[in-house]
Length: 471
Image: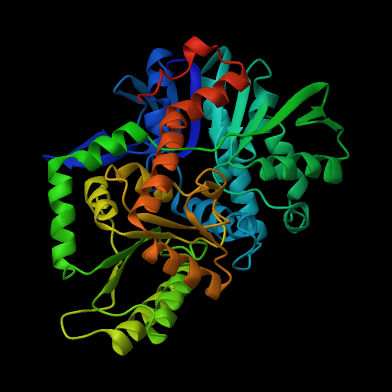
């Protein structure tokens, strides 16, 4: 029997990575904003984190790591294909991102999604103490709150959606739409990145289930479900410390030298995902080179595209398109030993990314749709020199907070080109002023503040939430 906890986090993944040391299976913490934010709350309550450990087949026995009880949930190869790659990433993900790619609907995927959600809910019901707080995370587990409430009506349940929530017209395409909505309404508090997403949710409850609401509160089965916006953030102080590290600063200079010390380094850092607008960004750069408004070797683009969901067909197609566009730009505008675009389809450490942020004159974050986009916030936090310019899509959640960036509509190539040129040509004093305002915001709105504001709204007492974030 697993140890019971008064605070439980339920997420698709556990915050650990498996490592083999001397032929023995061991675990180490995996770095991530979510675990950083929740670590103080979890350790204070001897909390439990429920999630999948990676791999298929038997799950390891529960264990403790750095003061957190780790409770693995098993997934078979077939469930990974149907619940994760299928329903979560080929149905829900594209639908919630404005159907940028056409969602695929399959009954067997929905069935697997139900079964896996039931397994996660069961695990939470088993480990939660009487009256405990359970915080369910993200789109893979939208049925868990209602399933859990049925088993354990004594619990306080929160749910947070890290990706956008679609308008009513789009959500109505979902074949088991009422079930998903009822799943979410099992929570006491449903959190979103954006105010508009919370409004979409409240209106949907009225439209689809005929439920009454007042402000952001929905009446369900004699109880109130609150919806609200809680924009997620980063560990700002940690990013600032990392960027100020002499090793990172030296590496940033090295990166610029490796690129031939151009006047302008333009950087993109994304998961290779069709929502990120990588292809459109490359086309905008190509057109500026063709118009002679940017020139090689004065301007160079570095595009990091982290491998992602490589077994999902949409992603395979995207990779081919992006790599074809990179080849075309380098073929037309590169010189011997001087490509116009340095394309890197690989993963990097946080330190190496910080060095890239420090080295880049312009950061391009141009998703077609994004819940938040923490890369934009990381770039701002890393610029202690107050240099650098952020070109940001209006359709990233971060755009509502980082108003001093160069905002653009990624669907409009001329708008993207204009924002990029304005960023390249901006005076240093103007860039410093913009950066200062954004950095001030990120210091007061960091990831610990995000967790604290959500848990306070859920009714977890202030003293129990994460400690004060560092200024």
